[in-house]
Length: 344
Ligand SMILES: NC(=O)c1ccc[n+]([C@@H]2O[C@H](COP(=O)([O-])OP(=O)(O)OC[C@H]3O[C@@H](n4cnc5c(N)ncnc54)[C@H](OP(=O)(O)O)[C@@H]3O)[C@@H](O)[C@H]2O)c1
Image 1 (cartoon, helix red, strand yellow):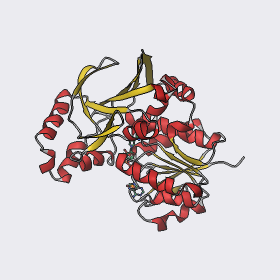
Image 2 (cartoon, helix red, strand yellow):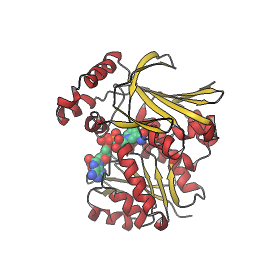
Image 3 (tube, protein in one colour):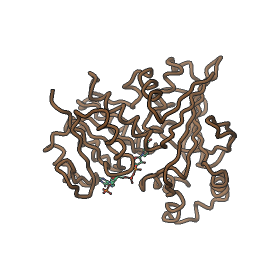
Image 4 (cartoon, protein in one colour):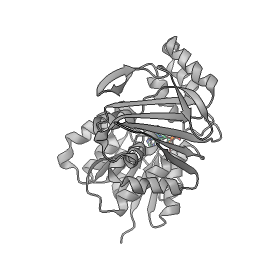
């Protein structure tokens, strides 16, 4: 069999590097390429600027089979290139507004799609869908899904990650209640939540993640919400005050970028998903000791392996739609730095 050629664009960034590390350790037979705007040292380092399609020629020259997109491609240049050249594509970078644009664009070209186009921008590389599926495979039975995120400012965060909140914190976004879209804002509508893994009770606040769109519009769960807390209670309540007093509105973008750009030396990340059916409430709790980059990268690697190893048909996927949820659950559960538990 021919070796598979995989290109990670943004492969020199925080998440891209970890994806490459885990891919290499688990699949020595893959031929890995690194794409970024910087000239690298080896023939497997490709100079690619996602905003400049002229730089994409090297993707064809090097016979890339699959592109992993780990840098924001607002113009969807790489997506269109992958569709046109029939290359596998997986993207972990799109905030909700960008995801809906990319999804609509892809749907409009559905007839022309002869490769796997995978959207994996949901929380932590899009594993929430699989975890929900594992708890209750009949989605029609689920009338509510609530995600709670524990976000440590001491965790490692790439430069690009700060931009989403900086750019969007003042803009309203949509959550779903009984299938009715409701406009909310980040850091408002606080709710107390009792986190597992020794964290305890915290105030949690609205956060826009693509799972809102995916779980309601694609999975048809009628009520979906996402709330987050920072590791520091002080920081969390300050963000709440800033939003309710409209302080974010009078800040410059540059100032908001500084505010949201904290990155430490590494810390754990936790998230929990509560689903409600007619007669039951179930909860899945996930802790990644090594933090967000490791968890996102590991789930992305599971998706890549699925795209390459199985006889997965061409088409458009949200990453959880490719998997058996049992397999994803077991892979996460067996990973040394991930703790998982399900309670009823
Ligand atoms: N779905 C999830 O759960 C999840 C979780 C974490 C992060 N993310 C997303 O993943 C992305 C990467 O995050 P990160 O923390 O790894 O960021 P990062 O450390 O800032 O890395 C960004 C990478 O992209 C490259 N890059 C920047 N602009 C580029 C361009 N125009 N063309 C080609 N390459 C370019 C950078 O290299 P050069 O500057 O040298 O070009 C670098 O390799 C972000 O969009 C983030 O929001 C998603």
